[in-house]
Amino acid sequence: MQRPVLKKVLMCDPLYFTVEDVYNPWMKPGTVNTKKAKKQWGNLKKIYEDMGIAVAVIPQKKGIHDMVFATDQGLVRNKEVLLSNFRLPQRQPERKHYKKWFEENGYTIHELPKHHFLEGNGETYFWNDVIFVGTGYRSDTEIPKFLEKHYDREVIYLKIIDPAFYHLDVGFFPLNNETAFYYPSAYSPGTIKELKKRIPNLIEFTKDEAMGFSSNSVVTDHHVVIQKGNPTFCKKLNTLGYKTVEVDLGEFMKSGGGAHCLTNILETNS
Image 1 (cartoon, rainbow, N blue to C red):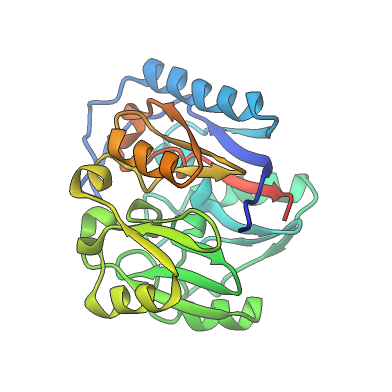
Image 2 (cartoon, one colour; image 1 turned 30 degrees about the horizontal axis):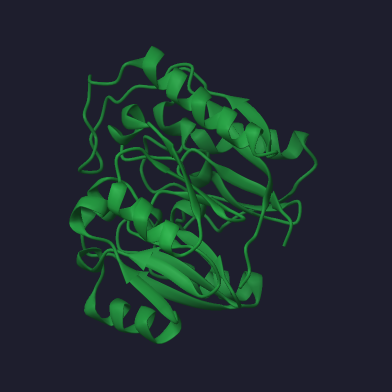
């Protein structure tokens, strides 16, 4: 069983984090405590550092609220990054700041055609020899074909049918190369059939686990960093031989984000 160990991640310091618009069902304008969000983010950063994971930080720009969700910014593989194209006008300003950071830190930049939309690791998981990509809300219907050609891998598209699970990392969580969790109500019948065919140990999230952002977890070696308040998910992970590290990211959940959303994985041992 493969257990990748994270070596380095990228996070965005939430200096001005708030919610003003609504473009997913989780968003609660005017409810975010920016000071509390900063503290929660700092707790997540410290968890990574205590695990020996290096954390690179990009500062948030004022007025670009979702810039804090670093995982959405691009797919990083071996010092190369495929930058995201955001469908929503509110998120499009994020791209140039991350592009500059990647350029300044020695990454080779690849860009999507202007008519293709993809929001990085929020919608995409590399799993064994295939790529899972979520479609239905933010990415366009041709993106699986583009990714297949770009990475020379088979791409499996997972059709999302519930807007609350607008990104793949809100309802689908690959734990290792044999096991993944998913929330059935988030996906089409054809997608569920495909997952059952592909994944040897496919485990359903309960509604409470899904609504508690269990899917938006981060795994490294035999540890899983999860949103605080998901006891049944913790128990399932413990049974599978994993230790859980809980962190409260409730302020970011008010925008539809959690630990995975805040974390772009730059380097692993695999």
